[in-house]
Length: 133
Image (cartoon, rainbow, N blue to C red; front, side):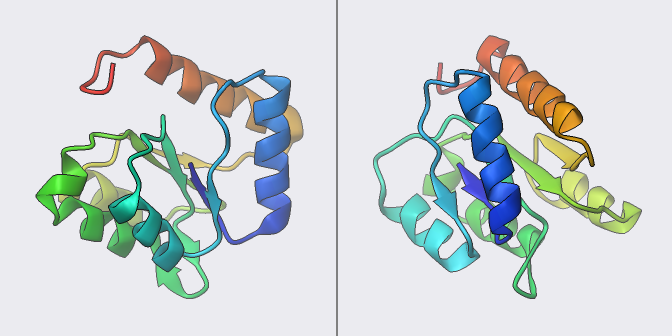
């Protein structure tokens, strides 16, 4: 699942998933409201949530805290990583100390580095034991 408002970044992300031959389909939202509605109503279990930190003036940390505040959504135990163009240290600290975030990654500038980081993140969660295994 990708929550990203920049279509170019979404297209790159999708291309990387295709090149990596990821079997899971990409579920993409360009705003937090649609992502939250999906998350609260679906029976689908996304493999990993990649979320930009800033989308149309809203903060990804607020979105994640909204998820964390609902026991039913927390129980889904879907790995959640921030994947953003930039990250100031205060936001990184907030993500790790005030919510259940499993990673915070800054988007790389080259396609090969983007591909490498996404590959590593996905490989980690494929090997990791967690409630959704």
